[in-house]
Length: 129
Image (cartoon, rainbow, N blue to C red; front, side):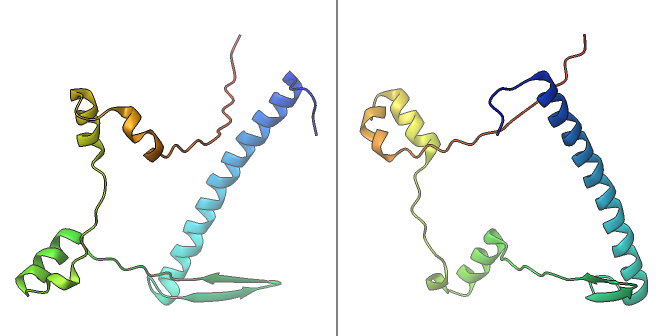
């Protein structure tokens, strides 16, 4: 581990960061090329596999489905299937903030209810002299 943060260390980090971006861009171009090939040879959205030398290239197709909330609720209500609609109790942040602003409730009353999430991000910017 490093005990100090030096300009040399930051330069190294910056170079790695730039290389990572370049590599990600190149990989995305290659993935597009592979998908275009499979689209032409087996069809779009089709699982595929290709053996070349010591490598096996595979395309997997992942499918996710979800309901359009508004449209599904409307249809279920038309069909009188209200049991199929979940009622979710959820705090209304805007109304709570308004109530605090108006003095209806104090922030102190809800301080034990607030969940704070913190995340760390390292950002390095090169400063041109």
